[in-house]
Each structure stands twice: as structure tokens, then as C-alpha cells.
Length: 193
Image 1 (tube, rainbow, N blue to C red):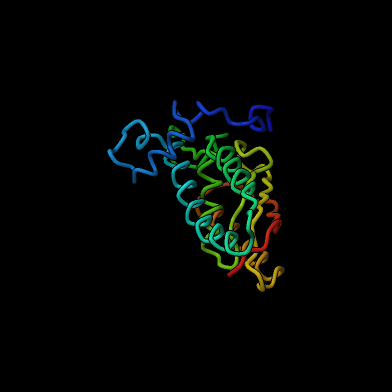
Image 2 (cartoon, rainbow, N blue to C red):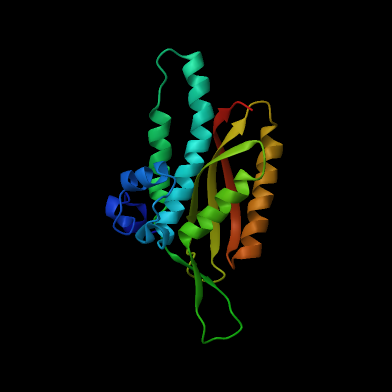
């Protein structure tokens, strides 16, 4: 990966908007409609991730508030930082087409979004980050996928990791031309059911 891919995402990398502006827009239920936001794939991806964060954090905040007099909210900052890093479009991932005159590609952010949605529908996990290691722009080059996730308390870790790994591989084979060499699953949190 280049140094650019590993760098922090500048606020203006959201097609001229900041995370705070997008949060305000989401607070207003995306009304009135702002074409500069809605017509931007990067902004829509950020909004989707922020909406997901809100869904997950409402229940978690309520549980933490009930169990702790002074809850630690640094985990929200970490999730926001993950969202910031994952909404950058990243590298192009080519998609084969029978007509050699056509060049089709997905952004790396779209692939990460596909992996995230696959994980979110697997059950027993709350997806964290996703990174793609390897030359995603070179057809046939091995790509290593690394995801972090929270495991639902009581769920069998090995079985859930195997199921998540298999679903990610199947989704990437179906929707991309990536050559998946491995999928590493790291459970870095335990969540209540």
C-alpha cells in the first residue's frame, strides 16, 4: 500500500463536506435534500456508516449508562475514526468485462462496504474495520482481507469466525474478480446479545 492509503483521511476528502456537516444533515433526516451530498458516493457511504453507528451506539450507550455512572465513550471516537478511514474511495478494483474496450471498476471503499454488509448480516457479530492487503488493482494478484468485529457474548468464536470467513469469500467471489488468498477475522470486542 502507498503512504497515501495509510494516511489519515482529511476532512475535505468527503467531496468538500466534513463529518460534522454530514452528521448535521443526518440529524435533519437528510432534509432538505442536498444534491452535493446525495450525489456523492463518498458522502452516501459516510452517511450509511454514520446511520449504522447510531443504530449500534444507541443500545450500547443505554446499557453502559445503566451499568456505569460515568461511561467511557472513547469507543465512539474509535468507530468514527474507522468510518473516516473507510469512506475514502481508495484504489480501483477492476472488474472483467467481455468487451475489452470497456473498463469497469469498483472503489476499494465499495468493496469494504460489501464486506461490512456481509458481516452485518452474518449474525453473532458486529463488524468493525476492514482492510484489503495486496495489489487489488492487478487481476489475479492475491489479496488478504482483514476484518475486526465484536462477537456476541456466548456465541462460539471459532464457528462464527468460520461462518463469517466463508460468507466474505462467497460475497467477494460473486461481486468482484479479486483473488482472495485469506480472510483474517479478529474479534476485538464482546457485545451483549
